[in-house]
Length: 535
Image 1: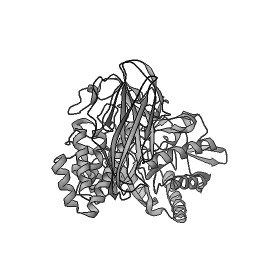
Image 2 (image 1 turned 120 degrees about the vertical axis):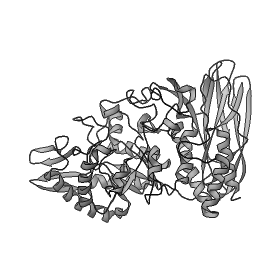
Image 3 (image 1 turned 90 degrees about the vertical axis):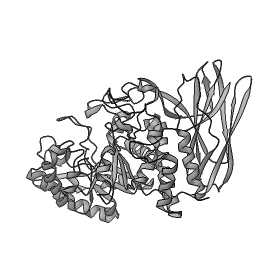
Image 4 (image 1 turned 60 degrees about the horizontal axis):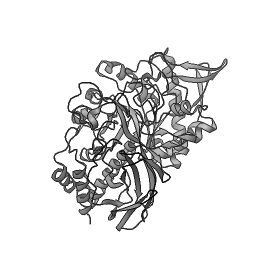
C-alpha cells in the first residue's frame, strides 16, 4: 500500500499511476482554513480505514469523480486544461467521510483533509494520518505551521448567485414552505462559510437564464396586492430571508433584476393578489418602459426604502437593472436605468456588463466587467469589480471549470488584490437547470447544464440528502483564493502595498488575468514568503 500527501492544488484521478510530489509542510495564517489531500494506492482491492489526528480541528472528505460531458468550447486557444479537457470523470465532489472505504486494485483513492486554524495559537503542529488494512497499517505525518499573524476579516464583496427556485425544484418542496426555508438556510450557511457576503435576493422571480416566453418557478419574497393602479406590499418573507442570511454572517443584499436579461426589454414575472385571486401582473408580455410597470416600480421603491431603513440595511443593498447588456442594448439600457434611478435612488446599482460606454455615460454606478475586460475599466472606475461565467476561459482567464487545473481557480485572489477590486460576482452557486431553465438536471450526473456550459460553470455545491449542501473541490480552492486575498491585505496593513506587490512580482512574476504561473509548488512558495514578511 502506498500513501502520499499532496497539495490541495493538485487534481488526482483514480486512473493516475504517478502521484505529484508531496508538500514539505502546510503553512497557515492565524484564523485560516487550509487543506491537504491524502492519496492511497494498493496492489489489491481491499477495505481500509483512515484516521487523522491534529491539534487543529479537521474534517475528512472522500474525493469523488463526477462526469463531465462538455468541458470547453472546441478550438479554444491558450487555455491550460487537465487531461487535455477530454470528457470523462473528474475529481470534484467532496463527500463527508466516516473513515472507511474500499480501495480498488491499481486505482488511487483520495481523502481531502480540511484543517481550521481559527482558535489555536501560532506554532508548529503535525497532521498524522493512519491507514489500516486487514493485515497492516501505515502512518504518515505532515508538519503544519500557524504563523504569528492572524488574517484580517474579508473586505471583498463576493456574490455567487443563489438560486432559491433550483432548491425547491430539486428537493420537490413548495417554494418558501417550511421545508424550503430549512433547505435555504443550510445553503445560505454553506455560502457564507465560503466567502459569500452579498446575497442575490429574489424580490421577484429573477429573470435570469430564462428562455423568451418561458418561466422559472415562482420564488417571490415580496407579497404584492393590486387594487386598481395602486399596490401594497408585504415584506414578511423578505424579512425572514434577510434575518436568516444575517444569522450566518451575510451583511449585503442584491435585489434581483427588474428587467429581463440580454436587452432589458421586459419585466420579470411578478405575481399579485387581485380581485380575481393570485395572478401574474407583469412578465414577458410587459414592455419594460410601460407606464403601468414604471408606476409599480415607483410605488415599490418607496415601500422598500421604508422597509430597509427599518432593518438598518439600506446602505448595504444593491439593485440590478438587467444582466449582461451589450452594445446594441445601450439605448434601451439608458432608458430603463433612468427608471431604476428614479424608483430606487437609495441603493447602489450593480450590473454585469463589459462595455465601458455604459459606465462612461453614467448609466450604471457599479459596472461588473468580465475578467477579459478588466483592463478597460481598471483605473477608470473608483470601485472595480469583475466576474466570470461560461465565457471566460480563453487566454488563460481564471475560472473554476472541472477540466481546469486548480491554480486557475485559486489565482483569482492574487489578481483581485493586484487590481484592488472591491467585489467579485459569479452567476452559479447552485444552478440546477439547463441553459434557459428549460428543465431540471441532476448535478451529480449532468454537470454542463444540458451541454451548454463547461462542466462546473453552473454550480459550486451539490444538493445532498435531507437538504444538506455538499461542498466541492472547486468551492474549497476558490475559498482558498479568497483567503489569499485576505492574507495579502493583512500583510499590506503591516507593511505596505508596495512591499506586497513586489513580493508578488518577485515570486509569481508580472501577473495579470492572462499571465500567471501554473505550478502549485511555486504558488505555495509565494504563500510561505508572504507569511515570512510578517514573521
